[in-house]
Picture 1 (tube, rainbow, N blue to C red):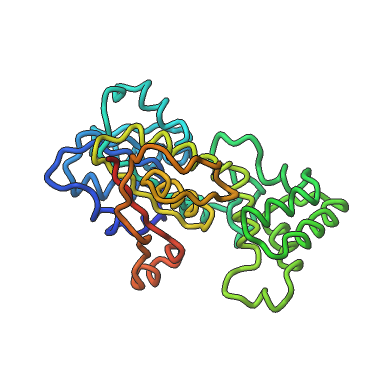
Picture 2: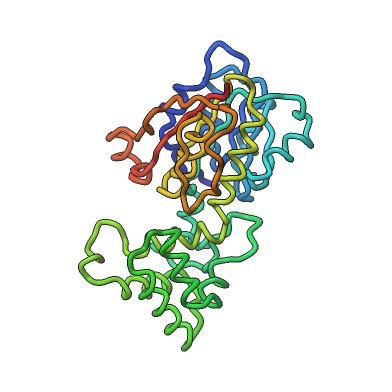
Length: 311
């Protein structure tokens, strides 16, 4: 299988990894293995643990495992990171670096059979693995209010109500069975003036559906808490996010754990203003991809990189 995924902000991620030190590292979103491959080639790695819920990751891990034997893959959700480590031979280890790339892999987007893309016709799936629902079930069974809420809250879609209403009207005649049919309904729901934007009119609704199908925001919240406990002193959490809700969760978590005044978010459970200070924020402002990277890989344009150190 051809690996189409280009790791985003790779140079920036590598710049934070300790040199001249034998380290334990978790690549919590292995995907196509871009980060792991580069790190294994350039750094002194004692153990590298890869985690990815998508079955496709096994293919790319197998290729890497032929060259490197100090690596192991857990094909599971990263929200189970603590259980995976505690039940493994690494249960007594602490980790120097834990990396999360919260974006969707090009290997997922570019495969029409996965149903992630509005550009190609495929089944309404969007499951990354071990999800309860798929996009077809949501689109063809959820009521108008619930659909509108998903599009608005998880995709910041201004036309969420109109899209939801038109989906209901369409499926009343015949179930919406593939990504092209859904994309067409969304496109017809968005006023022409917005359809002329550079961003495809179905982008936000598809993104919201994917997030809901895979419960992505809750996965991040759970994984952040559990990851911190696995870090060694001075261990680093390196997180690349691509969407404002994801980035807000990461930013709020870092702020809270570093002792900054807590500002609640509708997407994050309220936490008390007081609590132990366990992290030091390394990136006061998120790093963004350089222009040349965006030109070479347009999917990197919305990336934000945040780093915090355990203290």
